[in-house]
Image (tube, rainbow over all chains, first blue to last red; front, side):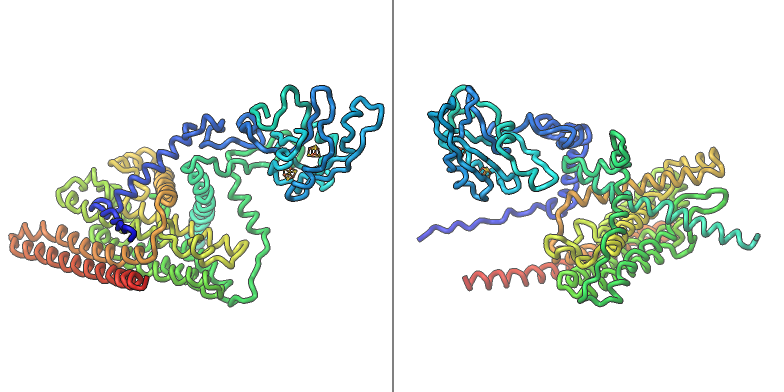
Length: 189
Length: 421
Ligand code: SF4
Ligand code: SF4
């Protein structure tokens, strides 16, 4: 038989029952927060770059960029390697894994005589619809060529739907070049 | 023309004190609430609304710390669609918002904002039944809420209205009883005279000058403090402020009685609530904290130095006290969690009601004892004291047994649930 332990509610002392003492202590806590926040000394204000009131950073003027962690998942983008070769071989794995179907790839062959003829394929068109993308990072995880990465760009805005679809050149522009050992699971990511 | 002058003065007072002074305070107490709440929670609050110069092609907006936020809010309320659901009782639905806002503003008429400015008292109606008028009219605002809840034809609104009704009636009793010792002490119902008396003889809960230093006043201090507590807490309950905001608690009742309201009608509820809070604060300040008096015996000096302009100084002092009290209201709101409904009712009926009654008797004995002792009626005084003690014991017993009855109700249901499981 299972052992049943009956837990007793803590007995309130007479001062606790009066309630006023509790309220007084509570007001002290809130007042302390108020003072600290006016002085700009709230807990965590420094590490969050507070604007001087509370712990809030004033958004458009000050940005989070220095505070983004290494593992931040922003906009997905394509990268080239150190010889400016497109890493993507248009295997379309990312297109298939993408849960909201944000990626659209038109695979293309690398013509003979090209410097990278041996690679055989590269995307002719590569589109990521940033209205659909949920920044899940699955494309990055699935890519066998380590060609697609989630970068730290988060403020992606546009005034039309077309503008929100990142075309191939835009993706390479965000992604840039990846040099050195680029391996999915090491810290260099 | 001569005959018109009194009316012009009254009109000036009404416009000056209500529309120029109080309405902005109401609007800005909403702003203060948001800013202060934000500061308590380590946030910033609305700090940007200002003059949008960027619209006109300038580089930067002028923000004034967001001080134009109330204007923007008001504009938003006016421009929003005024939606009346088809299932409501139209007449009461339209009447309700006005019925919450108007009583709150009417009660302002007896609050003395300051002493005299060029021989004119800074109070709209210098009537000799001040507190009674306030109670009579303030209790009307419960109609607004009840009508709103009922006319909305919606169960959440209805619950909000019913709760508000019960709560206001319960706490009105404590409110009325707790103010009796105060009125007994002053022997006057004219709020201007009450304040003038406090200016000369020490504030009610700070009797440190004038006649305030006598032994009788020192003894009276205790019941006055009790009155102050009960009165303040009852005002919290009357104005539906946290921790007594059960009529509109979002977590249980969506929006409470104003769930179905939108645009300016909602704004009227909202502002009516803040107006009630301001009237409540003004009343507490007037009755217990010396109203417009500077205090510490400095009022005579103020009057002699500034002459006709002393009224303005006093007005300023009153506003400072008022704002401080409003900030206190806000601080409490962001400190204390909401009561459970039965706790609220228990506090009103089992605690405050009894304590307020006993408090009246204590005050009476303290006030009656000195002249009786002078006349050598020691036995009668002793009998009085014994009477108060017996009455208190009786009250205490009633409260205890009520309490036990209520909690035993609960424990039987819990026990029943246990056997079933
Ligand atoms: S991050 Fe996720 S949603 Fe966005 S493109 Fe990659 S797989 Fe699709
Ligand atoms: S980005 Fe990676 S997964 Fe997607 S098509 Fe190119 S190589 Fe394949």
